[in-house]
Image (spheres, rainbow, N blue to C red):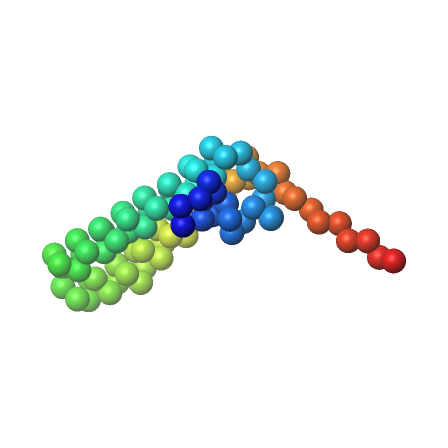
Length: 90
């Protein structure tokens, strides 16, 4: 858990090559996104009726997640260098 590489870097480093600072920013942004989503979920759950909460969970958080992933993809495309593995046929 406490290593020199972030969780995202350990999962994706084989496929995408990024500077360490970019890995750190990606990791922090995912952490903050999920904390924010959780806090928003709790706020809606305790301050609105159940039907509103269900709609928020189904449409609101799903939409926010999709927008966040698109933003992350754009950010990655600016900094990423794709690593290709060559296989030799004998």
